[in-house]
Image (cartoon, rainbow, N blue to C red; front, side, top):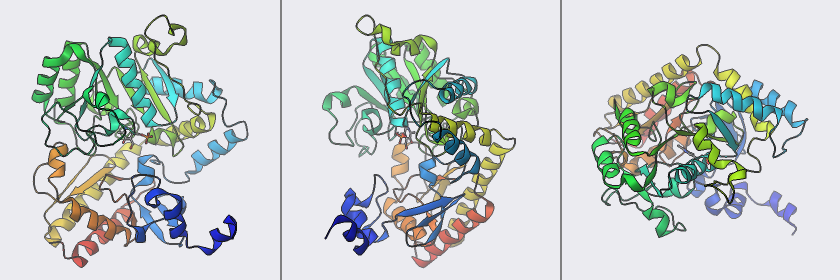
Amino acid sequence: MNTIASMFLRDERERCLSAFPAGSNGEFDFPPELTTIIERGEGAKVWDTDGVERYDFSMGWGSVLVGHANDRVVQAAMAQAKLGSNFACVNRRSLELAERIIEISPACDQVRFSASGTEATQYCGRIARAATGREKIIKFEGAYHGANDLGVTSLFPTGHCQFPTSERSCHGTTQEAAEQILIAPFNDLETTASIVHAQGEEIAAMIVEPFHRCIAPKEGFLQGLRQLCDQHGVVLIFDEVVTGFRLAYGGAQQYYGVIPDLVAYGKALGGGFPIGVFGGKRDLMQMVEEHRLNHEPYVWTASTLGGNPVSCAAAWAALDHLEQPGTYTALHSLGAYLRTGIKDVMQETGVSGQVIGDGPLAQFIFSPDPVVDYRSTRSGDRAKARRVQLGMIQRGIFLNPMGTKLYLSTAHTQEHCDAFHDAFRSTLLHDRFN
Ligand SMILES: Cc1ncc(COP(=O)(O)O)c(C=O)c1O
């Protein structure tokens, strides 16, 4: 039988499990019977290839903040695609977008594009090392900065190591890489300071998700990090791949009022198209200037699809959409509505748990203890969370059953959140979780 014939004869789920390891392109981790193949999306909804319609609370892991198939974004991308889709050279669209990001982002005198957030954070780390001549980088336990060494080291640690020792959450990274990454607990300025005071001379950078996974920084924490970095000549990197253009138009920098030395963006900026950006002060960004090669400290950055005009045109349209008056007030009030409803359902059903988050981000955790960092997040009942998440998928809600955050978009409404609350209630009651 030829491949085409076999494609039509075999069940799509079976084909998916055969073509992709675990039937997924990474991280979704559905049990085989719930393997989902998406056919299309519109606004806040997705349809799978069985024709099942679901409200989407994953939104392309937050990359589609403007809603699926947003008309403005689609028009812009289509118009640009007709004029050429990639030149691997500065083009009208990438130049305009670079200038607009520099205007929005206080940290950026200059930027370069990549095709993903993973590349952007990796370049930030390298620039910091080149600029300081130091090798170590501090990250916060459990933080994700993409699929590079920085992102996957101590991503899902057992939590038994003493700070600042890291754990390798991903085989294939080297022991040497793990030793160069120091781990600090988020929201614990004292422990972080003790690490910086002890090893400051060797630390090139501190990278932080200003809103760590789905945990808000305590009052003064980010300001404290800024001061620590200034005292010790450490480059402060904000990973704004999630927070950028989402918590506020000016991202976490605007929202929390702290300006890093380098910043990485991705996700929401692209309106659902592949994008990454890294930027910072001119003296740091000069590390990537090609004339330095073989003469001065130099960081190689190159991304074949970085700055492609289709992604840049889509990003421009996404920014036009997000810049409209009232966008962030609406996103924040809808996020509060979603979180309050989740809390109410927990109370009503007698299930012990809590909901964390801010702006259009939320996460439910089955633990009564305050969640301030990775270890307190881990204290929640994760097996129960997974059962609930899978139950929600069966009740018309699309989300990532890895227990990561829920993402709202500008296409979501209270009605969608009500549907979420109903599915949540029904799952908790049906499965007798209390
Ligand atoms: C905070 C953060 N940084 C970086 C990344 C990596 O971005 P990408 O998947 O575009 O490489 C992610 C992805 O989820 C992220 O959440």
